[in-house]
Length: 444
Image 1 (cartoon, rainbow, N blue to C red):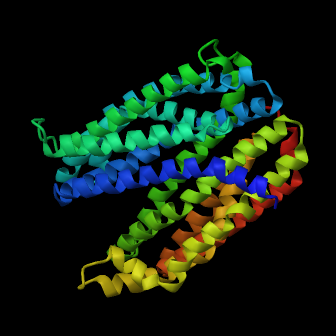
Image 2 (cartoon, rainbow, N blue to C red):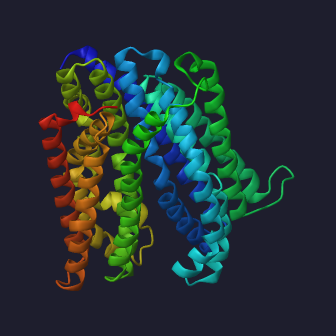
Image 3 (cartoon, rainbow, N blue to C red):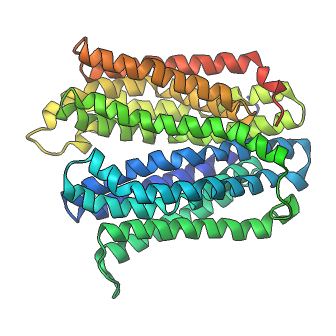
């Protein structure tokens, strides 16, 4: 692989990865601060965060559509039109996000009372969730900008803004949760308000940057045509549906594992968090692949677009291999970081040992899957991606997990064996779709 292509992959992916790591740090700090408020606050905020993740998944798919269209214009050399898809993404974020936000804010008390029986947990979580839901439009705006900056090779701006948002959120958490510097002590309400303010600040920063940097590219100069909005919806809606059902699938999975026992459910929460951390590089490298393949296709160079997906993996596979090492060779030590209570640690480590090793075995192949999936999204093949991802998760993995638990009496290892198999099969299908090159005919 030429050194120039290696450098190009990493120069694009590193800022994205750095931005995502800042978000992970924020989540950990946020959780630690809320943890000082007690078990009810921690449980309520944890439940609210998951419900919020499911809700905003319905709008974040617009980012892939903005990126695919902007990257295509960038590759075609039509630089004065690259921001038209961004204009459309911002418009759709408002049109979809505003009514979604209002409906879900009103429904938040009902959601908590229906899903969680403990009223103390509901009291802590509901108001936090409502603050987070108030930011759905801003979340859509921020994700649209992520797609745009990645497409035009300006991912550093994404890093700067998201890093600033995370730092502001942490500061406001300290001020508002605990009532520092004369501010009122607001508890979980303060955590939600801190997130809302920082998300709105991030959206404002993106808008100011775009006004300065993207006006020549068409930002806010004119509205996208109905055809362009239609293309955004055609490419973006499958991704929105995919993200929503993927998040919903986690809820179903937790319910299935809850039928096994409390220990398995506790271990699963840890395994999911480890998995989500391990796939962050895959998402970052995947976004780089989307930008590189989309712009190559815009130049009309199908062979170069095809090669970029594989070159991104060649440049980054060792990152996934490095992540696998502690899961495979220090399995118990990794798990004991999360299970500190000596009364239960041995049992929980025993339950989680095989699943964590399976995650380690599969992480490199899963990284390839994320790169290929995003490469397909980058060339506009969102419908095929959604069909494969949703079909395998809801048509095979979740029913198979339910049958393994209820009919076969399988424990957590059985579910993770199924998960490993389904994710490997998904990567294989994405590789087959990429090799077919039918995506080269997609108009974006």
